[in-house]
Image 1 (cartoon, rainbow, N blue to C red):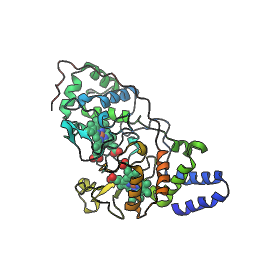
Image 2 (cartoon, protein in one colour):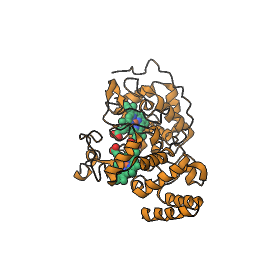
Image 3 (tube, rainbow, N blue to C red):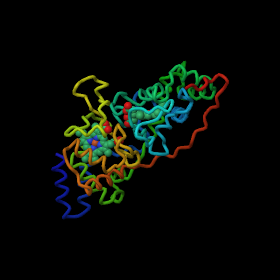
Image 4 (tube, rainbow, N blue to C red):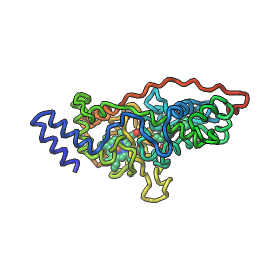
Length: 343
Ligand code: HEM
Ligand code: HEM
């Protein structure tokens, strides 16, 4: 269906550029969605300014890790695209984790979190890294002891969760982080173009968009985040080599224990992809053009020449958005009761 629509738009090339652009926009609006201009709502977690401010403090606070070294921002650095630009992340005790860190930017629009979708939403997700041995290596009890030792945090939880008889809980910790993450949305030239601004994207980027749809990339990378919703085998047509797809990580198989889910991963969301190298869950590929060519071959059985791949890369660059201004938060001072760093 995409193919025939795109052929229609190719036909109009001989008419005027405007007709082509309008036609392509109609096709694109059927498949993708511009980012909303305001903070989206989140299930079971009304978003308030007090919650956002608390979540921001928690996101930047390294004392949420056992060692006192790692904050969420260590691996999801908001100054570098919301990720750590490493092949796989380094966490507690200088250990290297098994997977590349995805960006937190726009993660609120993913239907499930992690490369294998094992967390349903951001609040569930936020409880993972705090406890993961290779990330922050902490326990909920120790996080709560740390928070309760600082009166400023206790006040902030009280304001963010007014009406709760016991506001300082691990659930509320996760909800506050989720509220902050919901503000990390990055409108990009692609959104401006979808919203009608003819000049927001270059001709090369529009040509890349057309290829992205025509080839079938958009059948998996669609919606507001151009991915982040469905699961597919990595290597649907041709399995990449172990240098890109290490055999030990079977993706969703570990979640569902169904043979069909071996090497199945969530179609990665592609917003800000140009600033979040290296690529794939293995982080083995540093060049976006190479990543695009691997995708074309492994998922679609197409060998993409350099020019077509460069056009798609140009389109992907139109997904680099404006990161909200972030003022570094001043965090509550620790007290004599604050648990000491360990490990
Ligand atoms: C995944 C947030 C701490 C490394 C994610 C995702 C989110 C997130 C939202 C899923 C993104 C997606 O699926 O597209 C947070 C928060 C943290 C935190 C709120 C603090 C509480 C860390 C730390 C590290 C880290 C300290 C590194 C040591 C990773 C990695 C993944 C990930 C490797 C992918 C794991 C997988 O898919 O199995 N994080 N993160 N994160 N994060 Fe974090
Ligand atoms: C990952 C682009 C087609 C499913 C990726 C990544 C890029 C990309 C750049 C890496 C994301 C990152 O590292 O954060 C493209 C392009 C395509 C295409 C340009 C067309 C040529 C498809 C199709 C499917 C698909 C058709 C589904 C059948 C996936 C999956 C991942 C992914 C499952 C995650 C792989 C992993 O576990 O590392 N895609 N894609 N893609 N894409 Fe595509």
